[in-house]
Image (cartoon, rainbow, N blue to C red; front, side):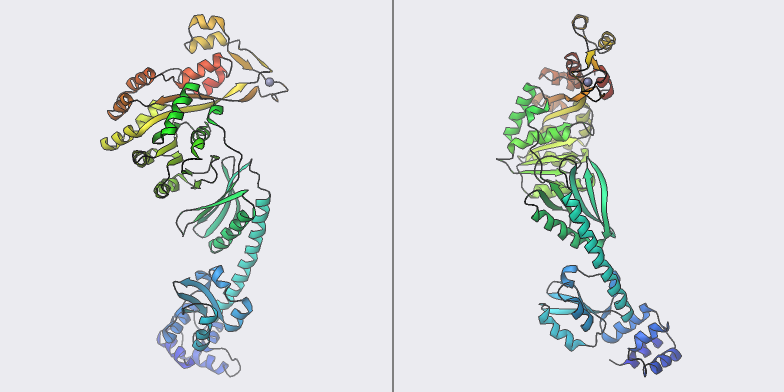
Length: 510
Ligand SMILES: [Zn+2]
C-alpha cells in the first residue's frame, strides 16, 4: 500500500485537490501519520470520502465504528490496552468468522497471528479511519461507564424489589433504546433507558441477578432474537383457590369438571380490574401438578402461575400464541385474549387442549355473540369449542362495623324489580364509614358472576347466530343466573350495596 495511491484515488474521485495532497505530503516529513489522517486533520477531505478511498485501495470495507458498535462479549476477547496497542477491535462473530475493525488494514501479518489468539477460524476485517478510531475510543469509554452505572441501578432496583407491589420488570429493546420498566399494580414506570447496544449487557446483568436470587426472582425471555424482551417476575405467594373466589358452589362444581376433562375453550369475561385474571388463574392452578400449563400474559395482572410467558403488548401476545402452541402444552392460559385470537384458540381447543382465556366484555351472551361475528366456518369452530363462559365484576362490600339499613332501600328494590313480599321483609344495607374502615365504609370486595356452561343445544344456537333472548333462555334452562340477579341477591344478603350495583352494572335486567 502506498500513500501516493490514496492521494491519487482521492484526487481522482474529486474528494480533494492536488495542492492539498501536496501540502499533506510535505507535512509528512515532520508528522509521521498517514496521508489520510493528515488530510482529514487539515480538513482537506471528508471522513466518508477517505473511507471510500481507503476501501478501494485495500479491498477492506470501511465502516463507521460508532454506528456499527461492538458486541460486548466479543469485544472482551481482547483486553483494552492490547486493542489500543494493536489497533484492532473485535466487533462480532459471523459464523466461524470473527469480524475485527482495524485502523491499519495494511498490517495483515499481525492480523493473521491474531486469528489463533482470538480463537476464530478466520478473520473478517473492516477498516476504520484514524478519526473514527479516536471517536470510538471515547464513545466506548463513555458506554463502559454508562454500563457500570446501569448495573448499579439494576442491583439497587432488584434489592428493593417488593413482590407485593412489583408485578414484573421488563427489559425491552425499542428502536435505538433499551428500556427497563417496572410494572407496579399494572402501571409501567421506566427505571432506566440506555442505548440499544447496551441491551445485551443489561440483559446479562439482570439474568445474573435472577440466578443469584435463589429462586426469588424468575427471568424469562420472550420474542425474536432482535427484539428479545426479558421479564423478571418476583416469586409470589400461591394464588387464590377457586372456592375463595366467591363463585357459587354449583358453578364451581361444573367448572371443576370441565377443567378436569382438560379440553375446550373457557372464557372469563370482564372489564379491566374485574378480577378476571384471578379467576382464570385459580381455575387453572389445580391442574399445575399433572398438566403442562403455558400462561401467556401481558403481565398487567399477576397470574400466580410461576413465570408465565409475558408479552408487553396485546399485539405481541397475539404473535405469541403460535409460540405457546409450539411448546405443546396441555393447558394454555391467555390473559388478555382479543376477539381476533379466538379462532386460533378454538383450534387449539379442538386439538384436545384446555384453553382458558380472559376477554374484555361486560356480559356472557353479548360477548359471545360479538366473538362469533366472524365468517360462518369460523363461527362454527368457535361455537363448537366453547365449553363455558364466565362474566364477572368486583363490587365493594359494606363495612360490618358501620353498616346500617339503607333509607332508600324500598325505592331501590322497586327499581331493581324485587318482589314486594321480599322487599317488605328485608332491607338493603349501606355503610357511612367508621374508624375500623378508615372512613371508607368498605370492607373488601365481593364477586358478582354469571356462569354459562355450554350444552349441545346452546352450542347449536351460537353456531346458528341465535338472538340474545334465545341464548339467554337456553342459559336459564341450564340453571344460569345473570350478573344482575347475582348482584341483587348479594345486595339483599347485605354483601354489597345498591350504590355498588348501580356503579358496576348499567342495566337492571336483560
Ligand atoms: Zn366502617
